[in-house]
Length: 228
Ligand SMILES: C[S@@+](CC[C@H](N)C(=O)[O-])C[C@H]1O[C@@H](n2cnc3c(N)ncnc32)[C@H](O)[C@@H]1O
Image 1 (spheres, helix red, strand yellow):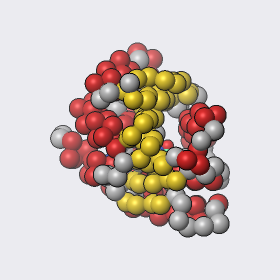
Image 2 (cartoon, rainbow, N blue to C red; image 1 turned 45 degrees about the horizontal axis):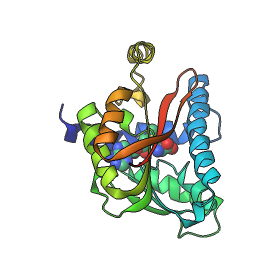
Image 3 (cartoon, helix red, strand yellow; image 1 turned 60 degrees about the horizontal axis):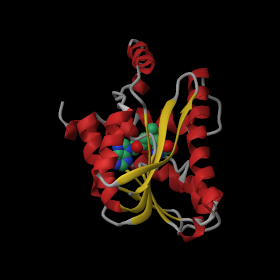
């Protein structure tokens, strides 16, 4: 399967069964135990990014691109905290849901600015580019191209998360693959942290803050890099 197929499958998934699944996980309604666990893990990732950026004390001076924004879980609080946010996603359904959530949470409709766009088609530069839990949908070669493109958009900082490839998580993923429910039906790719760090270095980045957010069924390595 080539990379274009990967992208088409991901787009279709997040406009159909994936939309229903992730909208619920990224919400506050009733979900099953596994989904609740993933919701809590994902919220750790969102909270970590918000705490890093808030601690810097300059959010209202920043332009931020949230590439693969999903339902706006990060974009909306970032806009609330004063950043100028450009929130984009390949899935029209996710963007529509994000806009609705933003309308409910915020008193204005200009910020975040939402658009349906493949992150590799973005061209406007921002101070900070953030891409959370998106690389899991792509194999290593595609992830490398995406990191290169996101790097070209980020003036000062890139914040990325990905599912790390370790023996334990490889096993957990294999177990999950035995039970491929229809709403889980995209492939999930784990990435070796050393390879991601090499790619970031090759694109001119230096590691600043990092952490691993994890629960039983959610695991996501979060890296912040700045220009070296
Ligand atoms: C697991 S969700 C994470 C959403 C969000 N980043 C968050 O953490 O709340 C992955 C999102 O990436 C989006 N996505 C996948 N491939 C993309 C691409 N090539 N360009 C833009 N968005 C993409 C999907 O549509 C989906 O909304």
